[in-house]
Image (tube, rainbow, N blue to C red; front, top):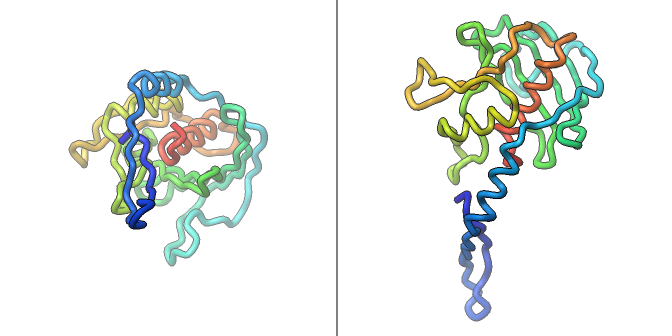
Length: 195
């Protein structure tokens, strides 16, 4: 749970493992939530268009890629590397972004929908069965605000699911700094547990 810390330990007498749950104080939890409500600061340090890269290695299906860009972006004082794919010919997709984080490489697809590209409410953490967690509307709004994304809306296809518009209308990755920054911040807030 969000307001608990857990730790697995062994009994000193019988060596049987058990879990200790330590509840955080509400004040500490509220202070952390308030700190995390601040919008992220991001700066594009460099980017280059590259050729011939596929977003999903190991798949038989080849995704038609119109543009691919690698970038270094400083987000809240930490420089991270990202790769972006612009895939307008792939039905349903618009962009795919991959970032390198302390917890490893993470990816997220941006869908095309009604013309305005959006992330879905699928995020981190995964649940105990290693299945994706679908974030509720309140959590989607909180994370979207931190990343500077658009207003969260209900999905027309899936009840109780949400779409988070990117909030950029200019198409393509090249010479589109605002889009690169929004895609990278969205990946960070939805696919890592940093926020």
